[in-house]
Length: 119
Image 1: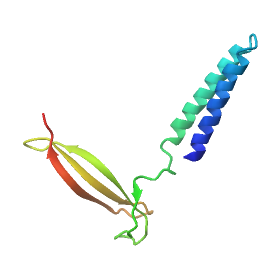
Image 2: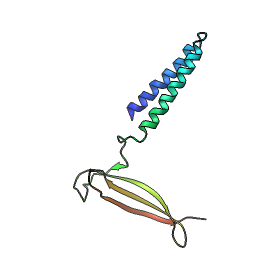
Image 3: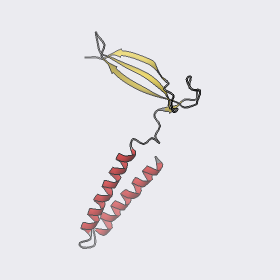
Image 4: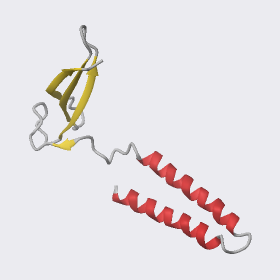
């Protein structure tokens, strides 16, 4: 994440330099503006490409071992889920725990609270 932020800062600084410095020279300002647009497109491409990065792990690490495989690869995250019940729609607040080990499909959910949705 730090490398991505550093790359974006460098590319943004390059875009500002192209616009502010090269814009003072006659006819070069158009080139600087065009190059700054290219840099902005590159920054957008970096965000788009690296946003679903597998380097960013889901949830928070859990110290316990996985009950299924015994490895220390458990991660958990708080989720809010809406479900349509028969009398009233409900919202469920829970903590989902997943094992990230290859081949292990362990998953568990602990419901924290459940409340009806106001109409």
